[in-house]
Amino acid sequence: MSTEQISKVFNNIIKSERLPIIFAGSGLSKRYTTNSFDWKELLIECISKYSEDPINKYKEYKEEVEHALYKNINKFSVNERIGSYIC
Image (cartoon, rainbow, N blue to C red; front, top):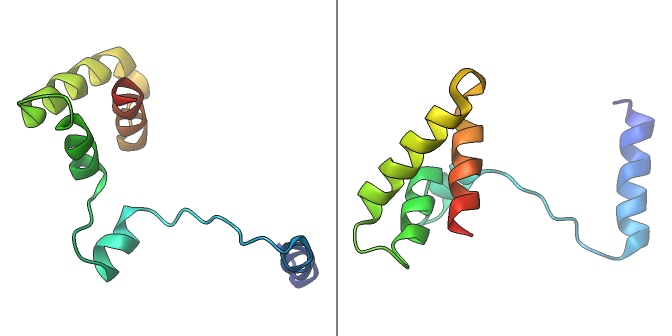
């Protein structure tokens, strides 16, 4: 992206008078805050709201997702799919 394109993006943000939403990832929050979660911990925390054994439930979901994704498996896809089970 050129400097001119970046300037246009920032000018559009300023003109909109709205703050942009930026997803930085769990690594940033883990590094600079306390009581934060990585993706696995966050998923387990969410599962704990409805399951008495959230760690085993997470493992069950993970195994199911990895089996379903088989060849197209990557960490993001697994976490995303597990998250869709929880919602």
